[in-house]
Length: 206
Image (cartoon, rainbow, N blue to C red):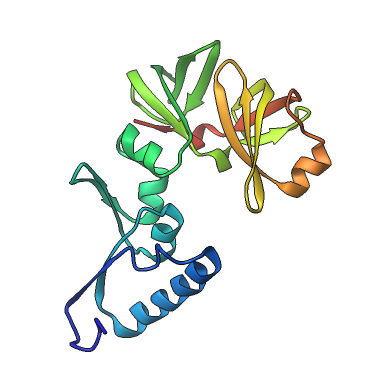
């Protein structure tokens, strides 16, 4: 009905929030198809990160009525400008620490005996953010381009729809995502000793 008058801007306030998940997925595809066909600027309000990433050409994050960041989905999810935005978009691994830059690489002490490397020129008090999907989990060490390698112990396993969220203590709590096949192949369980590996470029520094 909203398209009948050929509006310049279409406002959709959580239009699929009350639907079950399969219906939501079908409607996301339909909404994207309609948007592309109609070519109308659409403001789509949602609290669902996946929905925002799927439908949005640009995403705006609001906090207490104020827009705190606007950008492409990649910019907002990969380069949050504040700790609030990082947490809101599901970064999971957020650490406050002290950064010292040596030879173009930042060495960030986040406490707990954990010092991670990052690609940034920021020094002093910083916040280091790593998305769960950027962290590789293994039972043994392996050759990798990742500059950050930490040994830890699995403290929690959460079963999701198609994956497992693994929380491991490596001096600091890290959260990562693995497939159900990977969990089975590696025989990972609570208490398992594991290695956590991620690239310096995967660390976003605020």
